[in-house]
Length: 325
Image 1 (cartoon, rainbow, N blue to C red):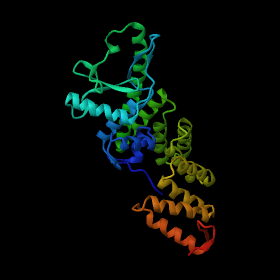
Image 2 (image 1 turned 30 degrees about the vertical axis):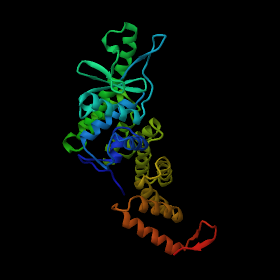
Image 3 (image 1 turned 120 degrees about the vertical axis):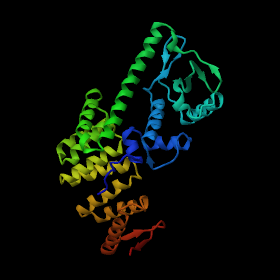
Image 4 (image 1 turned 90 degrees about the horizontal axis):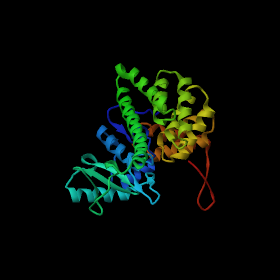
């Protein structure tokens, strides 16, 4: 059965789990040229992706824009294209090679500003901006300060999470990783990635009931988090609750139709229930999605066996029945 790697390099699925990203968001950053398309990531890549996530999130740090009533708006999202244009402009006006790493990027409405060299600049207009951090009145500072406090807590939780992920890699530090995940959940009880990782620690210890509870909490915390349903399916399968495991895998592939490992495990689950025709669909999906995967040969073999033994009738696009095999 497919398992997640536990190494110092991170797969694409690991990155989505660690940073609590959806695949479509990462793909959007790639299309915008914010990050390169890759399947293998290092720790530095995680840090840059984390910065982008922070800028894109509604709850991240922002430089507020003042309305006529004096209120400060911090909740507008920035498109990947706008981030790309702002980074390119900042590089041109400042000479910085890596604006995200060498300056502090701040949200200003639906645009980006950069604090660098003691100034706050809008790189698109090449104008200095008014910085509410520099004494704009107590009420406005309090409102910005609240957003900053929330952002600081989010950043601290993320730092703890990344530290725990690193500690999971060594048996000597695994206990400390467990403690850190528990600390995170005391502050953020619905932190889905921490729930998943702590659940996986229990899963590897064969403490399946504890793992099930944590995975279920993760699916409630983020009902669109495919990995939570995939891991829930794994633990239910270990507990011989195959029908429930099948439902969990089905939800995973519904959320992410190209989730190859979920198709593989779903095919296994259907075969165990004697539903070979349903299994065939997921064997062929896995073969198509992961042609170089370690289980590809097995999946191909299972599909051939089903086609041969079941003598299935395949309906062509024209509607005529065609004998398979």
